Length: 136
Image (cartoon, rainbow, N blue to C red):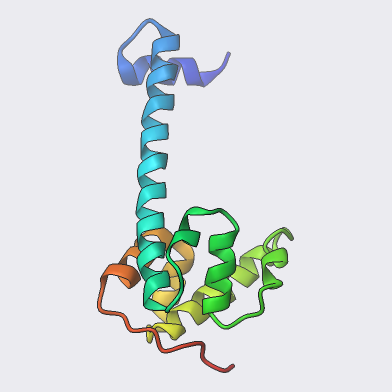
């Protein structure tokens, strides 16, 4: 027997499991949409600070391409994001170099790796200045 119906019933105090599932799906969709809006807003402002257009923040993969370019790496690195395990290493490198491009510390880059939606908001709406990609 699955534990999800028991969990849903316990959480929502409902005998109707379908209603509980629907509520869980609705709540997770709302949270996902809010996360998407926050990420796009932060990326848009960050791209503008870097002298780029803001609208690519809305388009999947194009926004990653812009992050890669702003961090000073070649655009073909986008393909490396499709390679399992290697994509994690590449994202660490891009996140650190992205933080350095905005005069931020290594710690900021590490937090950017784990919480990009929050750190893009801080970069975009904070006092960070774009300094350009730093040579390795």
